[in-house]
Image 1 (cartoon, one colour):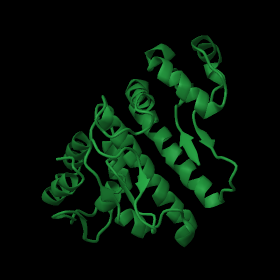
Image 2 (cartoon, rainbow, N blue to C red):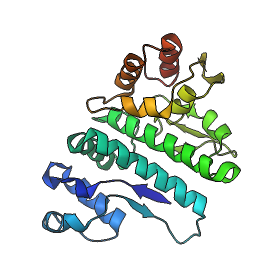
Image 3 (cartoon, rainbow, N blue to C red):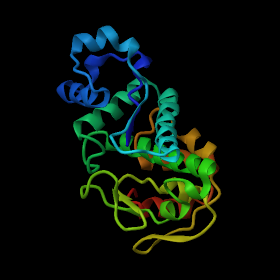
Length: 238
């Protein structure tokens, strides 16, 4: 089951997007043949958010988790605007997904997916509790990977724990109050931030996890600065 938030109703200039890769991506998402002409003529009828699933049955918790994820992208795009989202979409279609974090504008992808995964998991747990697709324990045990290695998000053990260069567990570490090992000698000792404070720092012009860290600290009187800096370093964004 997958989703996408291309936000077509936001006044796209489709010629600013990444050519052939973009059209192939749209064809796969919407299951229709497309061309530049058709896309510009009919973009008003195209969706902002797409949720797709295959032949297998899916339950409501899975559908809601993906929907919350994509709606979180929509809230982010509404805040940062179209020019920022061009960079996000172009990175995604150029790298056929999240890539390995070495392509142009990888930081925009890192921030967008960090927010999407966190809120998708957080809101589905709030609604479904123990029946949510991603438990709190799984998110707490998220394994950061350095950029340039394995791409995307992948399952690494039978418990469903995730590992990726995308810092998908970082926001939970900022908002929780417990201390746990991130990787190597790095521990999550940062705490006390809220989802509202995190969203407030996801501004236009903030295009990397490091810039987000600096904005978050600046907007919150450098709360727990040493531990926050160490946490980001543990996620390979120092």
